[in-house]
Figure 1 (cartoon, rainbow, N blue to C red):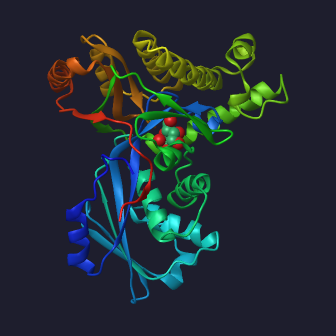
Figure 2 (tube, rainbow, N blue to C red):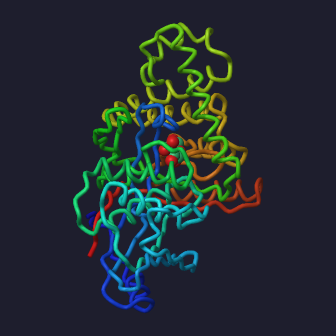
Figure 3 (cartoon, rainbow, N blue to C red):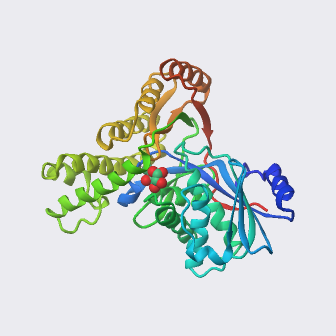
Length: 387
Ligand code: GLA
């Protein structure tokens, strides 16, 4: 585990006070995506880092015949008889993420026994930092309890639970980053081959996530629409080249040549996906060369592409980006995650952080009457057992 990961004593005490016994403790991190947004379900590249902020799932065997789960954040408990797991139905709340992965494990042939489970997370929910994947992956590991499951399959299982039980047709990025994160590195994930390369980040660059504290409800609906619009773009391109299976198969130069034959809306969506996939590759190259200006330029280009072509930004986020990039020591800023609120991610010189925070806070409070929250993000290790 990361040297920075700590075993949250108070969470263990909370478990013991509630259920007794000595729980096993599993941790799975949230993530912040540096570049490559919505490219994952188009089988392109993404470039997230796993965070120190994580979800902890504590588990101990029980004799009451139930899967009994307590959420520290929500102060709610839920029980499901183990025998009912195969027929469990979504409740459209936090329990779906946990029961969803238990069900997926059951489908793979893993027996799920009666247990007491406690979940505690310091990944802010609704912030675009992937609290859901952290919950899914830490819970899946807890139910597995040391039984072997290939890491890529673990990530895919989390994604399936979210798509099928929670009902959010997400890509693989969040679960993959939560499983495979490595301290000190970003991951350049190839979402088609499900492999990754490590990207070492220059030491001058602090990665700061800024939480806009807004999450517009449009999220899931718009996500589904974007998935469909990308499929429509693929269909239009197939009329020209039948070998194209996804937007990953379309190079930027080919797209530029044929774009006029794609209807306007899918054309804009495709332009974002194809150019942002290229920006992932370019960001890794710029990081390698320690080229901070190029990294910053790519961040801003990615944001503009989300703002105008993919149309998933919002006023609050645009304001945070536009304000940040005028501040000293800030190389780039862009929205991160699914869209319509959540966080921006910023490349900031370490010495410039205090001024960045003070000025951005003052401007945002004045314009939007909200206080943004700042997180310094250090690339941390992926999921595992702590004790
Ligand atoms: C959400 C999804 C991911 C990805 C991002 C956008 O976080 O869960 O799969 O599509 O949005 O990049």
